[in-house]
Image 1 (tube, rainbow, N blue to C red):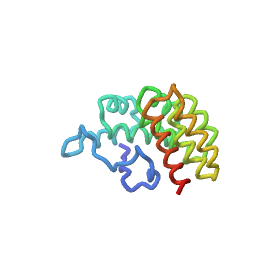
Image 2 (image 1 turned 30 degrees about the horizontal axis):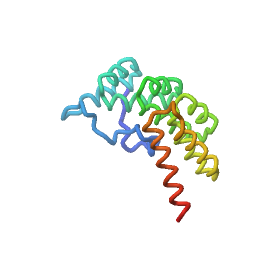
Image 3 (image 1 turned 60 degrees about the vertical axis):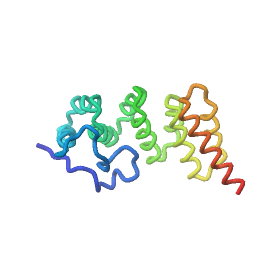
Image 4 (image 1 turned 120 degrees about the vertical axis):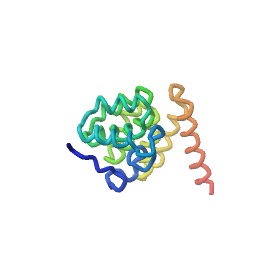
Length: 167
C-alpha cells in the first residue's frame, strides 16, 4: 500500500495557509486515527472518501484534499469547493496563483471570488505597482456584492497604507 509520510517538514507547503500537518484535527482521538485514515486515503488516491471525511468536518482530510488538488493543478476543483462556501479553498486557490505569479489568473478569480482581490493587490504591491494594488483594494472595499468581512478586510488594508504613507 502507498504511504503518505506527512508533510510537517515538506518545503512544498511552507507558507501555505491551509496546507501542512501543523495543526490537530478537532475530531481526532489521542492516536490521531482520523489523520492516519486521511493519509491512507490520500496515498491511495481515494478522493471520494477523503471528501466524505471533509464533509464530516475533519480538518485533517481537508488539508490532504487541498494538497491533492494543488499537486494535480486542479484549480477548477479548488474553485468549486470555494464557491460551495469553503473559504479555505478560496485562500488555497489564491495562494496557488500567487505562487505561480499569475496575475491574469488572479484577476479572473476575482470576478467569481472577490476576496481573491486581496492576493492580487499583494502581488501587484510586491511588483512595485502600488497604485494598481490600491485600485484593486478600493474595488473590493466598495463592491456591494462582496461579503462584508472581505470588504472590511480591504478597507483595513487601505487604511494601513494611508497611515503608513502619512508617516
